[in-house]
Length: 639
Image 1 (cartoon, helix red, strand yellow):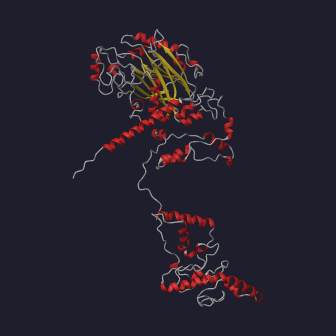
Image 2 (spheres, rainbow, N blue to C red; image 1 turned 90 degrees about the vertical axis):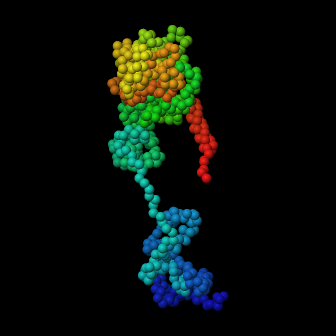
Image 3 (cartoon, rainbow, N blue to C red; image 1 turned 180 degrees about the vertical axis):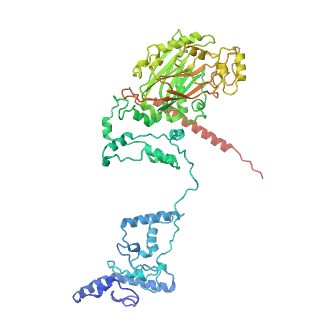
């Protein structure tokens, strides 16, 4: 007897309500052996206690149901072990994955993010009515009392047949959003793998060629299982319209290295075709598929000015070019007194992508070489030499500075020089040239890449590619009035009427100077002599004739090794009476041997850090100035 006056009847599986199907477990209970009847009753007596509490709770629910007919009722039966939706077995991992997916989908529709893990568990039992053991929906009549059964019993398949199909599925309590779709199309990439812009902007190394070859020779099971290589990434990037930067951040450019390759690789001895050679053909093709190196050459007579230009972007990074070059070589004549300050200024302009490979000076002649940061490993040791052309060697204003090194298997020589000045001193300038090519002692320790064509009397024959630039001081053999008249008549970029009177071109044709050298076509006005800060030629009493004193010449060992990209002057820098001259070139590279003394990636680290620090400080000052202007600005309102 309960506290409410109701009699408690022991659970008997034979006492079934009308219309309620009997399950297989119930049928087995009806067939009880008389000898075991007593033991079964004792077991049922033990089970009675937990069901008494459930009976009391059920009575309370019945009383509440009379007051509120819409009161939801608890599940009719516990969920059996191993049964899921549709009567299929669902593992514990699948349940966890389903709940996680449901939580992630519900979070999209929960702007307040009030949902929790416990809510999802409640949703799991409420939204899947067919997951219950009997298959009956949860919205049972208020007065119907659910029958409790032992969890280990199996259930009849007829339960699903008597369930209401209209109530099999309950409507989801939350709206599940569809996957996010892009609102617009991505800008298409140029679908040409040979396009210069795509290949230069996102340079992809065609690597792992030796690995693929080894995999084809070996057994199929021993093939190298590598990730998406750069060559395959290139194909994906060409055909994909998604963001290129996201793909570059997903895949690494580093390739797997096998211990066997490390053992066989030698950095001291090797041949041009040696497998794994640091300066060999395979490594060259990885970084330069077209075997062309971009070189930027600039020459400028600074007139010894103490004040440097505030910005050298127009000199080193002109806006009319699409891409920066791989190597920057800057030669200065009559440089500023503080050479270190000049080099820091160059590093600040070029930024963190470049490092100063080497710098040399002869008096006020400065020569600086910057290389892309990821290319310093393929440079050999750098050597330099100087020559003075003055009678008194202590005066180092006229002469030359040369820097030589080997990049892969191609040797380079860069010379900047300042010849004797004067309109009529052509012979003295020829003597300066002859003295430089004989006295410039390069190379010293670097091996000669082509000793059969080298001569001891000419340093330019001992290198593959030679660039000679500077203030050569060759003039135009015309009076100033005639030169100005020709300049007024010249239309566009046709400077041939002026160049017919150029002393340097005349001597080069006669073979008396710069033998074997070439010069690109000139389409810019004379670079000497201007009034400082103006675009007007010399207005002093001397009335000097405008001339092409600043030049860039080049010499290659093989035909068509050097291709001219641009040859122009920088008219925006006006702190000197000379205008800087700029030349951009594409130089052919050849593979080398590993017996070349490498520079081991050395560069001026202190200069690099100082230049980057100043670059950051300059940007911060710009932002502060912009913020001050914005705060001081007033907005006018019309009332």
